[in-house]
Length: 214
Ligand code: AMP
Image (cartoon, rainbow, N blue to C red; front, side, top):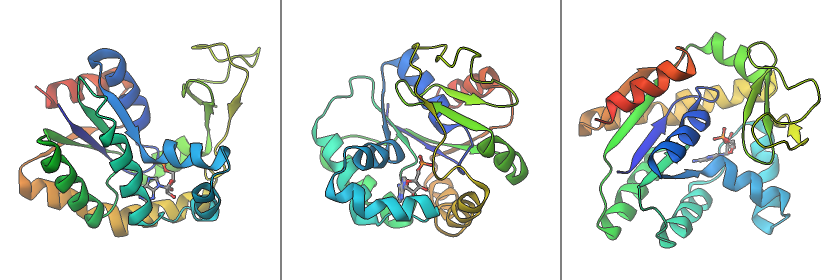
């Protein structure tokens, strides 16, 4: 089964994707994580995208489609792929459709995670992530443990993303509404769209996603 998790920044796509990976042996393909990895490893592409990402703008279609193509060529997903943060433009959606056809694969569902903007700002500005395992913390609802160690993997590298500040977030939200939200209509018209309430508790959201994937 191949699915897309669609939703604005802070909707909880990464958290739910990791749960699906654990539960269903799926492979998470997060273009955001791939781009961040490219930055930390100092590749040419990482340097090119760094400013764009920090501002909160979208990286070019060519770069992200290339990253996804490379991953799909590895053919690693026995349980299928979860596309997390990709596609974000109609051109990316078309490219993904073609890549899947070339592989003889289908897109089984597009899960839209609905959240309101105020909740997103509150969530994102309070967010911290374990650099080692991706566990997500929130200053209000799930604070970083007092000893500074990740409760999931024990790493002490719990960091805040450079683009998790109010200014970048506004730009990211604008990019979402201008460039990504048209995909909701696009996938609805194709008959692939399922919408879930992303503001419910993590377990409730997981249950709604499971139901949407039945
Ligand atoms: P994310 O971790 O998904 O919130 O992505 C962080 C940042 O990476 C975004 O604000 C964009 O600058 C960039 N990015 C991630 N995925 C894409 C994509 N599919 N298309 C364009 N830019 C992307």
